[in-house]
Image (cartoon, rainbow, N blue to C red):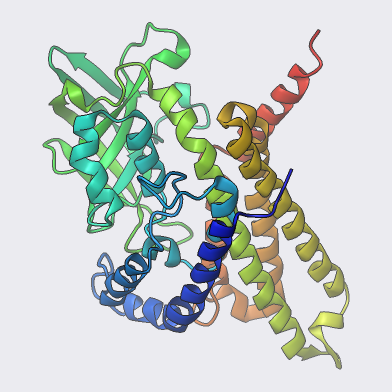
Length: 403
């Protein structure tokens, strides 16, 4: 196992760090204040367009995909450290066109999309002209078991008809979000994992209603957001089904491997940013005649945070290495492990940082800790709750001992 990234990966990482330091870090705080002051926050601020154009001009664009036709030709293990760097910022992933759910949706189109689907949507998403959403989770069922899904994608002649209500459809509030991938039941009598299909849906299709945007601890994450979307007798050509009927779970499995590495490495970047805030606060404030950094159990808090970040990073880099060398089938256990370990690690460090900041920690006016906490807590549910991933780890571990 070699954690040294390629020369190409080192070059991209160096340039991303420079861009983050020189272009994004100086403006991010002001960006959030200006967006919060808008009457309508569901807008793309001019500075975002400017920075996207700069990043694109420098070739820091679509770095997540490991071939040179669609991406930069970086390995998963190369891109992992780049994702960590972008995870230090809430806006950086979009600026580099490496943000979810667009990354996963682009991968679906590249690996499974028809020539027609690719020609219509892939250039527009990859260029940053439009954004996309992923509609899978449902309010009426326990979505931790995706086979519970009740929404339907029924084939009727030359059409596919979509019905159902989805929620937590990330990105659907963005003004540039124009297309979604919808997952629904096509054949309820088929084998359990062959019942579902994924369908590419233009969001201006008749019968689609964004019923509400959903807050996380009171915050809507404008201009991205998470929406509840009603699909009411939405009729599309049968050719809108991705890879053909019944292949929804197959596509989902392929989509989630690299995407979980991206999520987790960004979360590690967020943890590094949080620890930096925690340590600076602990060194700059005094109580009972001593710096907070040396008070009570705070040295343990700092030490545990550093150790937990390092362990989480090594596990995630191992997962990226396994994806590069063995593919998704050889990395299933690692993919589940990082998804259970990393968000919980981030949540604990953010909670400790909030405690270290005292009253300032629970207000988002001066520090980003409440937003980081919400981000960490959501990640423990997104793409499957912790319990589902631990169950997968246990199942794969037990399989090793079967005669």
